[in-house]
Length: 389
Ligand SMILES: *Cc1c(COP(=O)(O)O)cnc(C)c1O
Image (cartoon, rainbow, N blue to C red; front, side, top):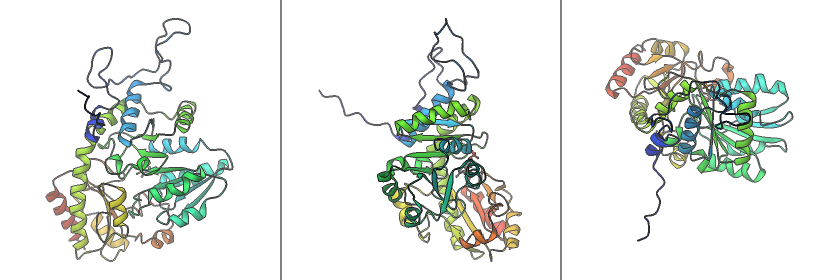
């Protein structure tokens, strides 16, 4: 009888098993934390393939294989932070090369590009990445990368990944998608035509707010080789303990993301109906201007919401922000605990007020990273905070 057709393991199975064979020396089921900087050599020029831990670490390699399997890419590379991943990626370029990026990128990525890498002779153009024509108009003969984040932070605007890939692919430009907000559980940019996926592992992939890390995933062999070289040559590698924490995190990614989303959808609908809220930004709401695109390119809408309390003034935002009891007032996102952030004074303090207001980013806008607590408790906290208005 013919063997049954091979089935690609599903997402949750890959999350738990990919990259993680039992340890060959002891059979340890969980990948050990290889907390070593160097490896013994048997004889001159003879070793087990491991020489120094900046270059090779098995805990890191397990996480890299795991993340590659989740994004559906051939190669994964891990870094000390999301920004270290972005920095290493841009180091594949040379002075004079040009990058087109979304104008609502994560603030740290914008700062890295604009304040650090521009000085080194790279050129950056920031465009409204919801508008594929604006991206096309910004491409030049020197453009090497297009970098987008979808959805963006905190306005939850989307970029049509397949439409942008149709522009970049024939021109030999690499499309990079920061998939931190959606995670591969909901969105697989490589399958939509992107060349590289960027992650802040700090957020949902790790999911427990207890480490900082970054990753790149690609199926482009030549690019992966260049990145592997730079990972070692520039050296922004993560430590094995942090890789182990992230591996523990990805095992529950599927169940966490389902619950983050279930809670976020319910809270977004609640906020959208609330008399003391003037606007709610969530791609899962039919009122979101790109709701159809969200449905088309992702299998869910994620756990991030932003909303405008009252008249949108700083006072209204402050009033509600200061009243939260269960939502913790903090930057960052993607952990099991719910957080509330005031982007204008925290994550986006460096963005000029006029630029914010131009995209509808009100002074009092608040952003929620909806955790996996009981929905009823989260809704009660939100309601009592809004009562302060
Ligand atoms: C946090 C974040 C980053 C930066 O990652 P770090 O791990 O903090 O360096 C990049 N992109 C997005 C969307 C983020 O949320």
